[in-house]
Amino acid sequence: MDGKRKKIALRCKYAGVPPEGYRISSPGDAEFEASRKLALEEEAKLAARLQRSNNPAQVLAEWSRNGHSELAPTPERLTTDKLYALWLKQPRKRKSKSPKHGEEVRRQLSMFAGYMQQKFSVEDLGTVESRHCKLYVSDLDDGKLTNGSINKRVGILSALYNAAVYYEYLSRNPFEKVEELEDDSISRRAFSQQEIEVILDRCQDDPQLHFLIAVGVSTGMRLVDCCQLRWREVDLNRGCIRIKTRKTGKEVAIPLFPRLRNVLISRGVGNPEDFVYPAVAKQYSRNTKLLDKRLKELLLAIGFNLDDADEKSLQVVREKGSRRASTFGFHALKTTFITLAVASGVPISVLQKVVGNNTVEVIINRYIQLSLDQSRQAFSKLPTVITGLPASVPDARDQVLAEVEKMNSENWQIIRAEILRRFGGKPDGVH
Image 1 (cartoon, rainbow, N blue to C red):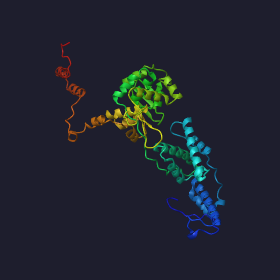
Image 2 (cartoon, rainbow, N blue to C red):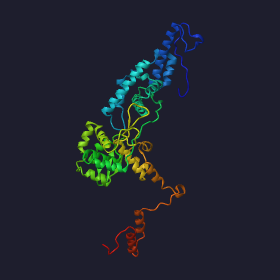
Image 3 (cartoon, rainbow, N blue to C red):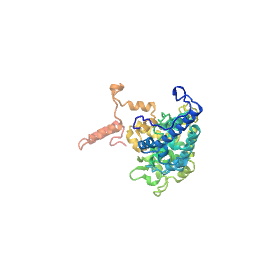
Image 4 (cartoon, rainbow, N blue to C red):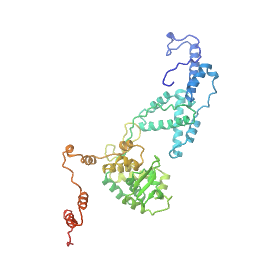
């Protein structure tokens, strides 16, 4: 208690003959073992009270004075139904819990409760201890699940117990000391600029897929946000898309460039609450995976494959887990958007506000997939003393701007003629 060990007498006298040397790990006679069982039951009762109480010191004081029989009545058992109900009604800052997520939470809770019953004969989930949780995670980590999948399961169970703490059924969360496993997720790969052009060209005959790819690669939005985009979220006057992302709940403002603007306007501007592409929104609501499947079928048709060893493979074998990881799919469009933005010099802090990820670390670790050429081009901007390359030559735009800035009422004709000469324009009098 308070970081210190405290000895508490259980007031259970042993009977019979104890083990030689009073070694706890050794058995005594039958009568002694029966008394040991009673003592362990008392210990479990005390542990349960300490776990549930907001004032452990008071519980120990009452126990020391009166013993178990004089304490307040035992609170109701924490069943799976009760724990789920507490989680369901707990206030949340982000979007409300979807039915699909609720089903997954129930499934994970049922699996955990079954494990506790079978492994430790624990029926009251309020008596679960940190050691139980750590053993559960250890047994999950058998190579059949990825670390990411295990972490998601632990996250769900931890959220359930956080609800029990929130409503004061427990004083602490038994999962709070369970360490997260190292992230072993495999990031989606980025398409090259040439691949994007080919993809957009080849899907002209599939208006739904063309719309989604154009929106995805131009904004970095997730599939759900592209499918359920509404006209109230498109600001044509200011040239941006303002949306609250469905996954993170972040409000973002994404610049609207000519290519995407034309794609959106071609749909015909509708009422604010209308979906930009109603048929796509309807298709997504029916089957969230079908649109991604159609993209992968297109990719296979233009040269991508299912060979795990090929850099254009749509999948790759994981070190852990029974299923292959997807490398190219709709989410790769977000990776492409972020990668091309970084390669073009967009600061990561700006990207974070545009794509809506919670942390810069997620963007760096999962989404930036610079090619060797992109890395070389970025580092070529380092000083000559490091690269040994000649000083960079200003591009044509910079050269023209520099000349224009020199213009005044006396020299503008001379500078104009020099610009036309340098860049192959037609001087005055030549047609």
